[in-house]
Amino acid sequence: MTALGGFVDLGQIVFTMQAGALFGYALLWAIVLGTAGTIIYMEMCGRVAVVAKEPVFAVIRSRLPFPAGLATLVASNLLNLITCAAELGGIATLLHLLTGWPEKLLLACATLIFGLAVFVLKFQWIERVFGLSGLLMITFAISAIALHPHWGDVGRGLLPRFQQPDIKHGLLYGYFAVGIFSALLTEYQVHFYSSGAIEEDWTPSQLSQNFVVAAFGSSLGTALTAGILIVGALVFLPRGIFPDTLGVAVIAGAYPFGSKALMIAAAGTIACLGGAAIETALSGAYNVCQFFNLEWGKSRPKKSVPIFTATWIGMFVLAFIIGTLGFRPLDLIDISIIFGMAVMPLTYYPILKIASDKGVMKKHVNSRLDTWVATVFLVLITISAAAAIPLMIVTHSGKP
Image (cartoon, rainbow, N blue to C red):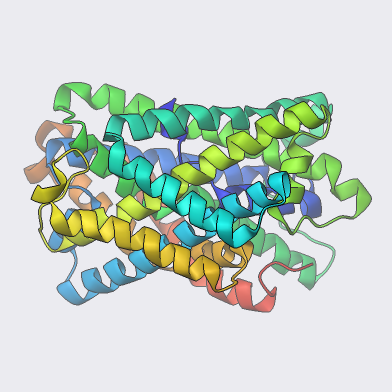
C-alpha cells in the first residue's frame, strides 16, 4: 500500500482529468497500458537491485557509454528538479485556496516541512507516512462510482479508438495518450523504488514481495487514476469545461459529496504531491551518487554521505527558487512529462539488458516471455518518445 506514495502525482491528476474532459472514457486504455509497463519495469528494477545490488543509475553507468549515461543523468535530474518544483507549487496552490494565505509564503512553508520530513524521518517512515496518507485520494474513485457512469461506455474506453472528427482532435488525442502513458511510467518512480530496495536490504527471498509491491501498488494507483479520468468525463465533458487548474480538479473529485469530501480530497492530493516532491528530491541525490559511484543512502548517518545529503537538500532549494520565479505548476509538469518521455528509453533499455543477462542475474534472469513483453513495451516507449515533443508543439501543450 505504501507503494502508492508518489505514484499518483500532479501529472496524472492533470493529464487524466483533462483527458476525461475532452475525450470522455476514450483514453482509459492508455492508463491500462501505462500500468502494465510500469509493473513490468518496476519489478525488473527491484529484482536487479536485489540480485545484482545495482540500482538504476549504477546500471546506466555500467551499461551505457559514458557520454550517453551522463546525458541521461543530466536530463533525468533536470526533470526531477522541474517535477519537484511543480509538486511543491501545486501544494502551495491548494493551500492558498484553502487558507487565502500568500502562495509564496506557503511554498516556503511546504518546502521547509517536506525537507525537514526527509531530514528527520527514516526511509521506511517516509514511505509509510506519505504512501498511506495518499490513500485519501480514494475519494476520487468513490466520486467516480457515485456519479453513476455507464459501465458499458467505461468498458469500451479500454479499447483504443484512433478515429477522430478532424486532425486537431486526432493530434490532441495522441498528445493526451502519450502524456498519460508517460505520467504512469515516470522515471523517478523506478529510481526511487530500486534505491529503496537496497535501502531496506531486500534479499532474493523477498523477490515475490517485490512483484506484489510493484503490481499491487501500481494497480491501486491506476484505479485512482482511472477514477480521476471518469470524474473528468462526467463533470466537465457535458458542460464543455476544460479544467486547467489544480483547484478545479480537486473540487471535481469531491463533487458528489460536498465540503467534507473536498477536505479529504485536498488532503489526499497534498499527501501524494508531497510524496512525489520527496521522491524526486531523493531520486536526484540517488542518481548523482550512483552514477559517480559515491556513498549514498537515506538510512546512513548524514555525515557519512555528505554529497548525497547536500544533493537532496539542493534539489529542494532549487525547486523552491523555480517556484518563486512565477512558473505555473501545470506548465512545469507538462514539460516534465513530455520531455521525460523523450529520454525514457535511455533509462529502461539498460534495465532490460541487465535483467536479461544470465551471467549477472543467474536463476533470477528474465524468462523469454518477460524479455519479449518488456521489449514490446520498450518499442512503445521509443515510439512515444519520438512523438512526444512534436505533439506538444503542434497542440500547444494540449490546449483545445
